[in-house]
Length: 302
Image (cartoon, rainbow, N blue to C red):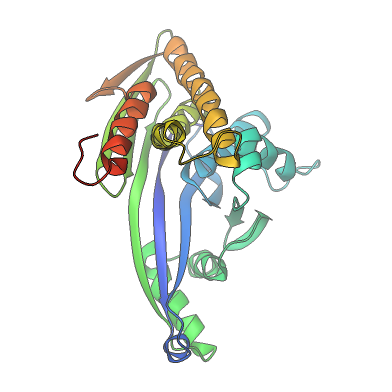
């Protein structure tokens, strides 16, 4: 591929249905992470455009990386004599940790508004939105009210409230690139970027760069969980040998693998961080301190 410019959107759709309210039910919430994957040839012409939606952010980016890797080695994906093995790709992307501890995981990949691969359960609204975008070739922001109108035509006076924010910015060229990471949580927003450039007269490995971005997205969240749960284990809130304790232990192992993935990128290319590189170990420690404050008995200091 000549270059890659895209972004990962972290999305929340709230469907307000007067009929549901009358029945005593609250609004329906649909969550999704979405990334557009333009597959370009060496001249910069887009050969195929894939839309990846997934349950979590890092899975969406890793699937995007797999598609780019396959496109670079074998050209356009959809019209091959030997069909692309979507199941195998998803198996690699989800990995052992996700398969063991995330039963809600799902993935959906679209081309021109049509679902070309799906696994797991997602809200039907997402398909309606992608169908609008694929058939009308309009801007994504305009597809959401169009989907709302389609639902209303079916007899449901639904109002869709949309909240979307960028979690990853990707700008990659042959010999240099930049990835920005924006992670929002209840108490703070973590923002940093890293630039990548080649050490020799060779091209960047786009899938490897995306993989590092996914590693940061996953690692920051896992590190927070490991720190919080670690303190709960110490206090007996999470029982020894419980499923939660096992997940925390496996998450710590997973963090070391994510660190190795990032280190591989740093060994292959010149990588610079701004303002600084997030260290998973420090995030674990900060989360432990936060847990100590939260879990401290009333009137006592942690």
